[in-house]
Structures are given as C-alpha cells and as structure tokens.
Length: 421
Image (cartoon, rainbow, N blue to C red; front, side, top):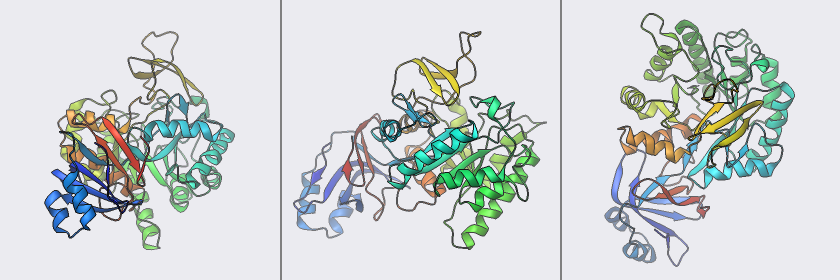
C-alpha cells in the first residue's frame, strides 16, 4: 500500500488498523507532518468533518487485501543487528547500522543494550550511545549487568561480574548523560538492594532497575521489587515521569519455577499481577515455548508484558561467528549460542536474532490476540519508558506507523511521518 498524500501534504493510510485497544478492520490513519491526527474506521474519519482533500484521499485509497497498520514498535532490550553490536561499537556509524536494521523492520523506538564488560569499556560505550540518544536516534541505554548472578549469567562475561556498586551506577549515568534508562540487576548480589545500594542509585539517576540473571529467592526478589516500586512512586510524586520496574526476559537467566522453590519467577509473576512490575518476554520461538508465551499473556494480560528481542549482531544476518561484548557467539539455524569448542551444539543462548515484528508474529502464532501482541510490543514498553509520545496509533502521538501485509511482514515503515523503509 502506498501512502496517499492529500494536496495539503497530509498522508492518509488505510487498512486493518491496530489501536492500543482494538482492531479496526477497515480503518484509516491520517498523518500531518510528524504527528498522527486521526485514527478510526473509514466512516468515523469521514464523519469527523475532515477537509475535502483528506476525505477524497480516504475515498481514493485502496489498500491491498490484508494490509495492516501497526504503531511503530518499542524495544526495551536490544544488543544490535546487521552485523553490528552496541556493546562492541566504537563509532556512531556502527550504532546506526545496528539501530537501522531494526528501524527498517518496524522498531521506531529502542534502547541500545550493553552487556557486562570491564568498567572502562562500559563507560566508553555509554558515552558513544549517549550522543545517538541526544540526537533522537535511540531512546536511551539499557545496561545488562554487571551486578548479576554468576550461576545464571547466560552470555555475560564471568570475569567482569561484580558486587553492586552505587558509585559505578552514578559514573555510568554520568557517562550516559542522563540517557541510562534501565539496568539489569540480581537482587541477591551484595550491594544491589537496600539503603545505599545500586538499585537506590539507579532510581535516583532516573533509571529503572530490571530484575534478572538471578538465582535469588522469592523473598529476595520480593524485597527488591517492593523497594524499587516505592522509590519509583516517590520519584513520580516529586515530578519525575511515571516509570515501572521490569523483569529482564522472564524465565531466561533464572531458575525454573518449582512448587517447593518458587524462586524469582513466582515473585515476578505476582508483582506483575498487582501492577508493580512489567515482565519482558523474548517471544521469538527460541527462548520460550509457545505455551509459555500464551499462558503468561493470558494470566497477566497484555498490559503487564513487554515483548522484546534481546537481539544481537546476527539479527538480519546469516549464520556464522559473532561477538557479544567480550564473548564469542556462534549462530546456527538462527539460534545464537556462546561458542564452546568442546560442544558442537554450543553453550548458553546468547541473545536473539529476530526483529520485534518477528516476535509479534510469533506471539500471534502462539495463540495471543493480535491487539494484545501489538500492545505488548508498543504501548506497554513506551509506558515503561515514561513516553507518552510514541507507542500507539493515537491522535497527537508521533507519526510512527508500520504497514504490513496479511502475514505481518513489513511493507513500509514511517517514523515521525518520514518513510524509512
């Protein structure tokens, strides 16, 4: 489907429209410059008293059957793509390569995720990424580590895992020039929870502690959630944007839930159910079984779930050898694992290779309604970031639109009203 411009420069898009709350089978999205100005059924838009040229453009638009209009997607956890890795980038062009790979596939707002590395490297990467965030090309920075469990480190560098350090949080936030948005932390690691700990320093810096890569008990996880939720509420009462704590890729990097040792998974599910937490799901067909995706969405509802990619440099690339920070990764059959010379199958899963639109498609294939899958990949993560200008096909929000075919594959992507793919 080609966007239909009116003589005034307004752009009219028509097709099946996915709003935050519903699917409009024959709908219209009207863009004016970098903003969405109207969303609704064809009849609703015409009845809204639009200008004659816009009404004519609506009447003349003829979408290909199956054309679907989604909001620009929002990814909270993404390490790279197109052969480039945020944890390994040393130039702005490398960052743009990685971000551009996902932008062309419908992710119009994203955090750039770092991995555990030595102190100097993490500070240098934060400085580099901050420049792109200041330019509006990134929504901020996510640091996955270094205050994580050795036992559940996944693809994190074991030699660089350290105890919680509020001083380092402040250094990292300063290097990020205020663009540090989230940091994954394990509640049981000394120096993370409690007064003067890393979690407290993160909230003070305007960043969200995200619970993950942990072997903590249910009680340790509950204590951290209670501390952070209270801190975020206090910050919001003081005028800071309303933010929500997250759980980094629920189930992955955690002990399985057991009825006699429920661990962090039970605490995260309960916290999400009562509104204190949003759980990330890497619903890419590799990290989680379809039934797990379906069950969590049905139990918590889409409003407490953020779909993420955990993508690394191999997203959009063929199988082969890649790097993820200090760790070597081998991708076979689209699955990224730590390179292990002693095991031809490889070691721990080392991030994902999907785009967020692929994750939406996989989530729908698992039995989740389209409106819920899209909400969890756009509206909810935008809310987590305290962003009220992106994440939904809603009048007044930024003109970020993904046009897909009937199989939810990208046909055209617009960001702030500008076609980028």
